[in-house]
Length: 261
Image (cartoon, rainbow, N blue to C red; front, side, top):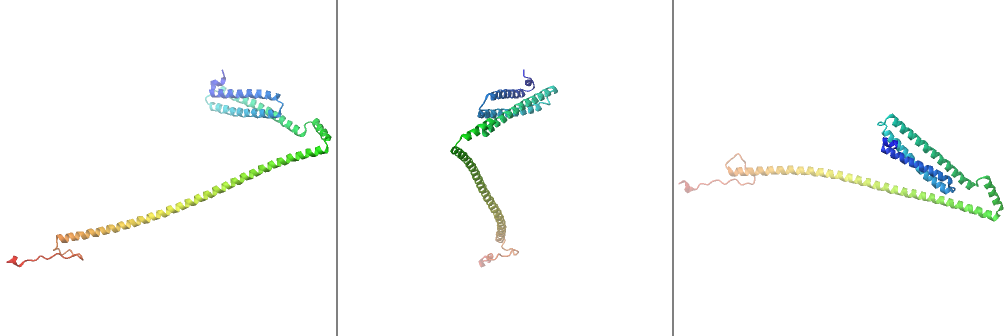
């Protein structure tokens, strides 16, 4: 039974994944020794490097889970987990060192192929150049110059593409800046309109209040006039109430002559 299963199923699962990666790394480096082609070696090194990155991530996850369970575990269990973590780190570092060694050897091979390699290769190149005619040497030089010119043209194209991207980015930023300026101006205009509308509402409110006061005063005047008219009609002989201008006084009662006989 896996000792990590008794501590945590998650820890056991992570440990199993790390063990699988270590087996894959061991088999991968064994196969790498049999590969002679530099391009295939480079591709396999990239695959092994990716596995080592995944292994490093899993070891960190293992350490984090172990620290989470540290308070619940006994000292012996914590010691066992820590030793296992150190062991996995040491094993991973050994594969990292092996990968660096293969990468260094691969780089040296590429330099040897480019520069002529060992002394024997250098002598062969000298002998080959000595057997070439002047025309062949000129053609070889022209070919190398053409390749250099093509590389320069590719570099120029890359630089021009970069400049174009920068120009487009600057134009886009300028357009966005102008758009933001227009938005700010529109917000200022809206703010001014709201402020003006608030002032108009206040003025209308004052006018409405004034009109209400006038209407109330007129209503009181009309009510007073109506009251005076009613009182005069009910009690026309009351001298305390003055006649309303424009209103005819009440008719005097006449006595008929024949009524007194």
